[in-house]
Amino acid sequence: MIKIIFADFLKFLINPNSQRIEFNSKKGIHIKRILIVICLTMTSAITGLVLLVFSNLILTKLNIMPPDVENIGKALALNSFNTYQIFFLAAILAPFIEEVIFRLPLKFNNLYLAFSISFFYLLVKLLAKVDFYLGNYDIKYITSHIVTGVSLFIVTLLILKIKRVKNALLYVYKNKFGFLFYSVAAVFGIIHYPGELSIYMFTLTIPQTIAGVFNGYVRLKFGFQYAVLMHFITNSFVVLT
Image 1 (cartoon, rainbow, N blue to C red):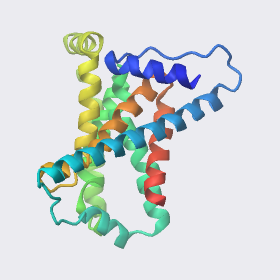
Image 2: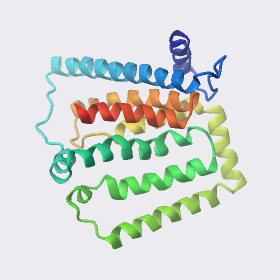
Image 3: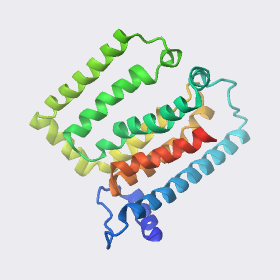
């Protein structure tokens, strides 16, 4: 079964598609999918790390060194939250939110797109801000952005009711899906950019970009919940180590 999955994955890299993988027997199907997800998670992590090391070796040969910067967000998180809070934020909340934003809308659905856009707004305005780690947000600030997020959700649904807009999106999903898929994976990697503008720091997004490809594959082939599981396993390992 694993060989079949990896063969399908290689074909998928050439021609991304949303055709689900069906098993001959429904017995123990969830266990089979979980085991496959674990194998793909390990493959994703190893592939990302190998490419990261390889790219860093090339940059070292070119005398491009990493800048002496500190990950402020990470430092503030370690100072502001205890271990359990960090695990919840990084290994449970973040995977769910990021999968809703980046993987849920890989299959066309009005609700999926609306959730993706509204969650992305909340991520940018709340969770991605340094003030979040400092506890500087008051209830009024948080409430105003939640209201805006809900408004975006409703507006997106209304816009998608417009036939011309919906048809244009359906065309992209049907005829430009490969471009859409890899664009989403690339953006997923970019949002994990550490912040210091340099070629070296840009290479640090390679593992996340690779993970975006693998997670996208799992979401399309097995279901959204398995993509969340894959993201949870990856982030849990990072947090615990």
